[in-house]
Image 1 (cartoon, one colour):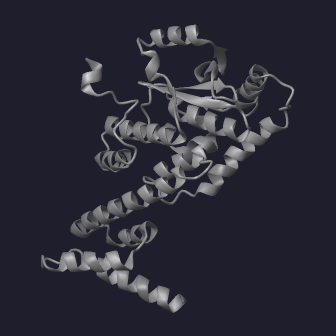
Image 2 (tube, helix red, strand yellow; image 1 turned 135 degrees about the vertical axis):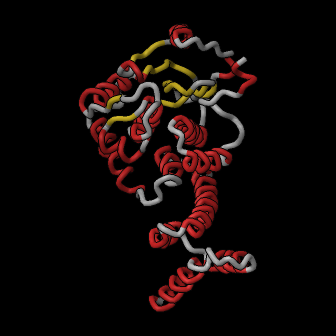
Image 3 (cartoon, helix red, strand yellow; image 1 turned 120 degrees about the vertical axis):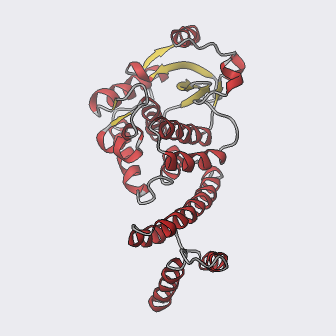
Length: 297
């Protein structure tokens, strides 16, 4: 089996070395053979490092990697969304893996589970929903000391999933997503209400009826519907009630992809922007962070 795998890898490497052949008839033949051999992204990235000075081959290999990544992400996101109980963190990782394919899921999950265990030991069934959320907030903000940085979403590092979990610092959007994931692991009935401009965690009852909102930007302050309207007004946002809906983890993963696209555009990284644009298409046409022109007028 090792010999077969070795021969396959050697054949793939040989085919890739032909990608810069000036004969136009060679490229489609090489591409078709590579599709049959189905190299994975990790393999192509390793081979790519050998051709740093070959601009043509580098360009063509990048296009091939981007197409393969898109296919893998589409397949994996579809499988994840069909799971009986999809874990939000996994969806975020699938999006993030488009940019950093070497980042493994298991260490990320372990960090989230460690945070959840900090809360588990304190939770008891006889506590009210308000008491449980207060307890969760105390542990999350004060004991674990997970904090918010880059409030205006200007730097890319604060949006990086692995770095945020390791440093316990994230931009407001990723902070909210991690807050939701850890709350789910703790068994807390905290969901996300999405609206044009982002999302806000809400606590719901067993029928998923609204109980109260959670202002994660103010150490988890609890407030009601009227205060929520005031909260939006402070940001100059007016949203019809019908646009305030509980959203799925699939939608939240799409919002994370949208934020990475926004960041790539703001820092002028065209390659990253194109990658995230392709990923965004997998989530449909609805956008929460980047307003369409007709919505802005």
